[in-house]
Amino acid sequence: MQEEFDIIIIGSGLGGLVCANILCREGYKVLVLEKNQQFGGNLQTFSRDKVVFDTGVHYIGALLPGQNLHKYFHYLGIADQLKIQQMDLDGFDLVTFDEDENEYPYAQGTENFVHQLSLFFPEEKESIRRYVSKMKEVCDSFPLYRLDADVDYLSKEEIIPLKASEIINSITENEKLRAILAGTNFLYAGIKDKTPFYVHALSINSYIESSWRCLNGGSQISKQLIKQIRNLGGSVLKHKEVDSFEIKDGEVEAVTTKDGFTYKGKQFISNIDPKKTMSLIKGFPIRKSYLRRIKESEDTISSFSLYITLKPESFPYLNKNYYHYKNESKVWDSINYKPENWPESYMVSFNTKNENDIWTDGISVLTYMRYEEVKQWENSFNTVAEKDYRGDEYEKFKAEKTEILLNELEKKFPNLRECILSTYVATPLTYRDYIGSETGCMYGFVKDANSPLKTYLSPKTKIKNLFLTGQSINMHGILGVTISAVLTCSEFVGRKELLDNINLAYHQKFNL
Image (cartoon, rainbow, N blue to C red; front, side, top):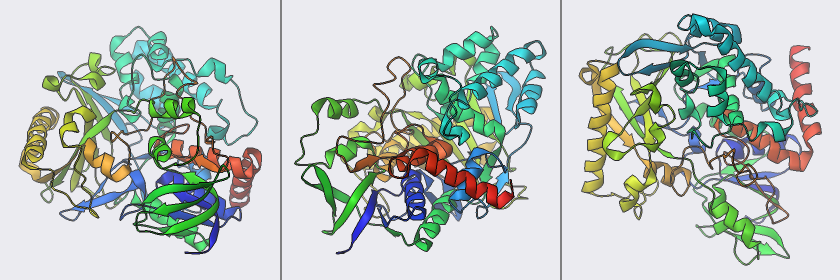
């Protein structure tokens, strides 16, 4: 391909596709290069026994008209194109524990959240109200969360060092309530002595505003984004793994792909793991301290994911998720599990194809797993496009872990095994091979309230025309990565101008 592009984006995860969409709308000639057979990064889905499973997106928040993700998705041209179902208003997430029959609800809407949870803790109603107020206060201090370039109610110096565990503990003395308020921290792989409260707030608050399940999988988001990109004149190519950057006079001039093609561009955005990005740069003397900071950045933990297909009409569809723990002490500690006690927590999500489904045909179960548990097989590589059998020992490992996890699940969902048609597993190696991070991490780099500057990564790199986007930049999750992409695109368009364009499009649509 001899033509030159204004902007070349490496990786078609949500961040790359949102950047491509925005920059096409702003008049740039854009090319997206994807290494896999399927676009979308963590938006990818797969099918087993005719059941569609999500790999990374199990629900979405803030999609009611007027809410922030709805505004972003409207500007991107996909808000009205998604097939979604609102989850249970009085309990879209349930936090549960062994030997406790109660199912503690996360309800949609601030007042409803306070009301439903205070039914279990009537004496703590004001504490629960303070909790949601504190989350909103912190969220409202992020301009891109509010879509307001001027807002900054709390200074970043006040917000960034606050730890999630400490703020939650300061709100109530009730140990059970503390565990419940932190009980969905699988959404960000929470670490008790590190995770900032802003990560907790930005992850949880949008779901309290409104929570939605994607009907028949979240890959529809990437498909709709790609449709918009192509309609706007952009190009999106798969089976194009970037092998290296070509550097000339201190700037990236082109990228080469493993199939021997070269693509020239004026500006470049990497939506792949920043560590991988740095390894593709050859022949340019990047400051060693910068390279070291990226190379030594701590990855979030990975996941062991069990995908269960079910016999027809055997298990009811539940329009909610479960976050389950052996006891309340494991809410912050299950990430540090000992192999002999694994798993100490898990998250369960139920599949749905249609809005009125009574039965579910599939269940996704996710629990923490460190990369070191599968490290002995790390020299293997296995995807749909590049198949490789990892060996009998690996299959035995997966089977043993599946049995252990099913035993735990049946404590919460008795007789589940009787409903099972088949099971499939993804380990940290699966995520590594498909997503491209070194350890198959779930949410990019760890954010550490103790060293905020060390764990903050700017969209700008030390090469003038190379930028970063994705879950390691700013925030992870659907809303977080969308905001991260807007942050990256602000380097080209300007933050105020871009937010003005997004807000103007929304105001014109809804006559605001």
